[in-house]
Length: 297
Ligand code: A3P
Image (cartoon, rainbow, N blue to C red; front, side):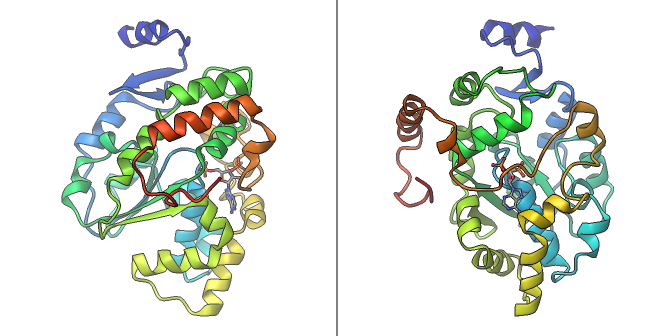
């Protein structure tokens, strides 16, 4: 109840959320004790691989790719097991429980911001692959994904969602803070930074980078298979990859994961004023990073 009145004070009517350590989580999908347990109790092991991203950055495309690398391009696994079981989510109850009972090297996924990520990771040799995407595209993608669901308060227009996004009053909080904090891991041997844009432009090269990072060697024909089965079209058709079977997604509403799959769609949706405002905020909040680190314009 205290949490609820705190949302009201923020002036956003954010009843779809509960807040934990400054971050809005979805009241109908997340559980406070699991978020807390993810940070304080969840044990990441040296042999684990974690895919981490801010929402709508190409997370599931990366998951599909990593799964296919593990099977050397054989699609049997991705076509028979849904992605949330192949790479369970740390911060959702189902994923958390699956993971703590799983032996051997684990593949897992998370959108958690740096300060809420399992503390055990920072004492481990586990690998994190962090994927970033132009936040303008992540914003547009999130708006179309979430706006008719009960996961977030209905923003009613992209303009309203745009305001919330810049303030960080959206699921998982501010893109700027998420990205700044996670980028502090750059240069660590167990951290690989990827971008949606590079992955679109040079998919094969990105797969090779992931293979190097994970210590996997694929033959050229195996790499062709990874490319084939992780394509937008293949994932859209694969019921194990497109959310059509996810029990909660079905309950919440029809969630379309595979929407457009392009870079730069924000240009079709932002007004000139919004584009200028976004540029200004981006420059302020991301000052200090080397030019060229963010591969979009
Ligand atoms: P759009 O809404 O812009 O189409 P996430 O997995 O983090 O939720 O990200 C979802 C975004 O990744 C969506 O973007 C989706 O279309 C895009 N995506 C998913 N699979 C893809 C693929 N194989 N190739 C390109 N984009 C993909």
